[in-house]
Amino acid sequence: MKRSLAAFLLVCAPFACAQQAQSALQRQNLPALRTVVEQYLQTQTAGLPGQVTVKVGQVDPRTSLASCPAPEAFQQPGARAWGKTTVGVRCTLPSQWTVYIQATVNVVADYVAAAVPLAQGQPVDASQLVMMKGDIAAMPNGIITDMSQAIGRTPTASLPAGTPLRLDTLKSKPVVQQGQAVRLVTKGTNFSVSSEARAISNAGEGQVAQARTQAGTVVSGTARAGGIIEVAI
Image 1 (cartoon, rainbow, N blue to C red):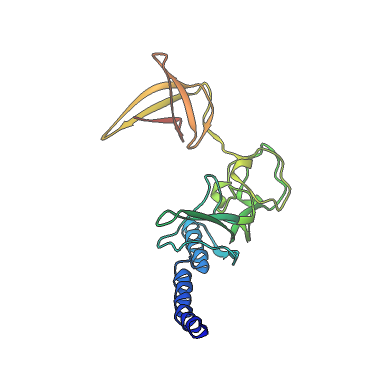
Image 2 (cartoon, rainbow, N blue to C red):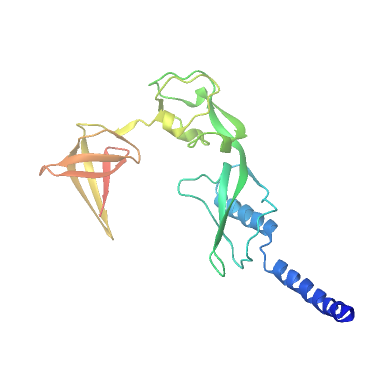
């Protein structure tokens, strides 16, 4: 009886080891998920100025997932792909699972700051600006990185020297003003038609402007320099 039991164990032990090895082969490689996240963030930040550095956090080693041939990285709508962020990785086939991995993306670049105190409502000129370098990923959205984006605009509030400038803190000078006679330029495929109208709202370059035609119809379009409103159809 003892000999039979010993022989059975000798036969089963290799089989059990094989089962364990097969199970290990069917589990997802966790470091590979970090690589998926890193590649995703590098793609998402490819168009940003300056030097981009991506650091992906560790995956809990206790996490056990079925092996996935093509894990896919994603982010929730509205999430930023820079600064401190979270990226999801999901699998749909052959098994369905999702994990979330923390990451930090630093973007060291030149940005525009106030060289002197800027007064509310006063147009900004180049002598009042200075270029500085820092991690713009740690700053609010809309940081200005080109002086031309700030020159001629007016601060919506007084700003102390050294303040990084953002697009939402500077108001562009109107190129179309309420009551002004404007030219409507209606554009379509291979044609363009101009007509006269009168603006009923203020708008800066590239903003939406409204005007009333001579027939009394209100139309909306994109404000352009020179009192022009472009209407696409």
